[in-house]
Image 1 (cartoon, rainbow, N blue to C red):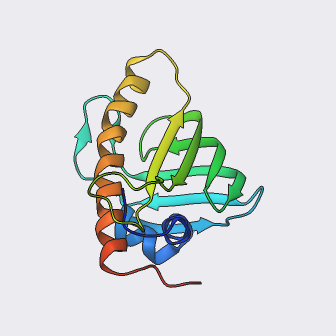
Image 2 (cartoon, rainbow, N blue to C red; image 1 turned 60 degrees about the vertical axis):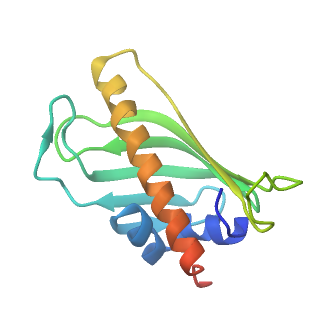
Length: 155
């Protein structure tokens, strides 16, 4: 739960400075419209994962759905600094109010869900999801802190 409206949360997924603040991106080109690009870049890590190699690189996809409650990307690929891309995947982000609010949640709180799909039964894909599940948890926690401290300005 994030004590912010869905509009502010979704804006943070498309705003260049917000993406840098909560997801640690270096650069991004995103457009919240059908067939818009969704490309983000992270700094290449110095350390190497035993299966994936160095982390960082690019994530790219195409927006296929966007509305006030969320968005969806298709043809999502992670292009690591070393090695072949991982994909195709899909990514869906949904924001929903709980009515009535969950116990202990603020009336203005929003539940954020991220669903990433696409899989090939291989050690590389299994490791990808293992590493990036933890990364999503950390990033969403940072997003929560960012939005609850200060809303993302309107572009």
